[in-house]
Length: 205
Image 1 (cartoon, helix red, strand yellow):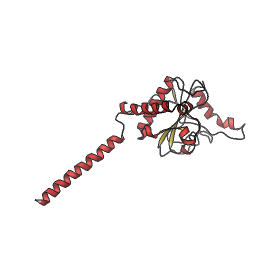
Image 2 (cartoon, helix red, strand yellow):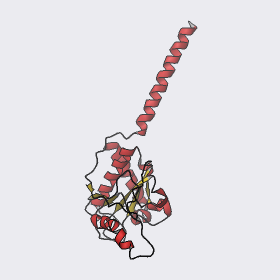
Image 3 (cartoon, helix red, strand yellow):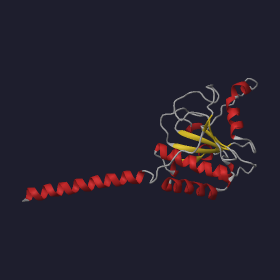
Image 4 (cartoon, helix red, strand yellow):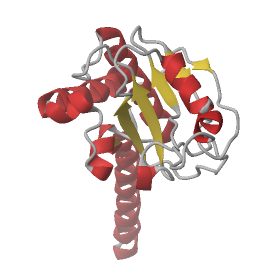
């Protein structure tokens, strides 16, 4: 009798543990499948200043930036990264800069660096993050509705793809204290709203 009760107890305990593990897994994953937005691939030519070809193996976050070049396009910023080899020939202090993605004023998304390579964007976090640069019309750094919408969609997709949440999304400012992206640094409420919109996208798809 006692043996039977013991076996029954062990079965119930095992079922409870299994249910708990499954519940935790479900809580860790987004509720919806996130489809990738349209991305124009325009990869930089391999070079030491913007695409060194160093492997990016452990992705732990997404870093948001702004270009600090009001009125410029996504492709113009991509081309700047690509031309750094020529630009640096005329400079004593070399510039190292790039980003995995640049989002334009009209919401177009240009990919500059493969997602298995580092970009020169986020200083000490280059080795474990994906970077997104955003274009803007004015010095305030505020994004157009099209840029903002594309940023939410791309960020949510990358979170979904790599098993991250909005808690893993940070500003360049959070890494180094640099005022980047400016509008999200100057307006912390706008930054919190952005993270909330990413969270909603992860849940709703």
